Length: 129
Image 1 (tube, rainbow, N blue to C red):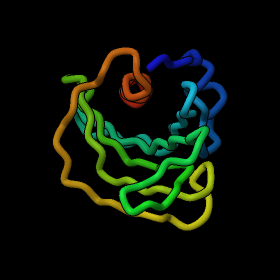
Image 2 (tube, rainbow, N blue to C red; image 1 turned 120 degrees about the horizontal axis):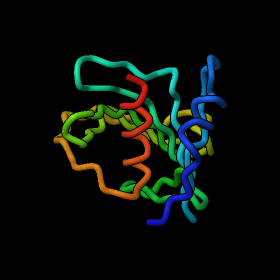
Image 3 (tube, rainbow, N blue to C red; image 1 turned 180 degrees about the vertical axis):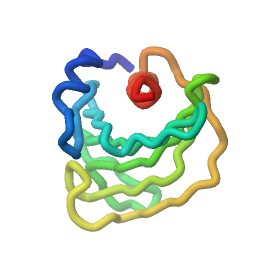
Image 4 (cartoon, rainbow, N blue to C red; image 1 turned 60 degrees about the vertical axis):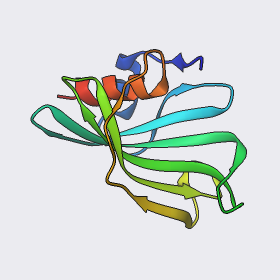
């Protein structure tokens, strides 16, 4: 998946002290946002909220369409891995409207794939240390 990433400095500058979503990259199908105001650190671990906004609606397992998802992700800054703690999906873009699905997870750690949105988010979260 080809990701168009913006410079880390631009992201830090544009989000500044204001809370909210900052666009950090995009592919043909998805725009990737993070809320740097939600970064929480504990030792080598960092948690942050991310939002994925889809160019075309996605159909869930139950047949419902959704246009965006919001995730709470924990990153291991020393081992280059992550796990989703919580996911919610929304019919409208940018996490608007009521959540269609809420999922709390007891996830397994997964590797950070190079050149992906996950890698960019891992770097942003861990660089906030």
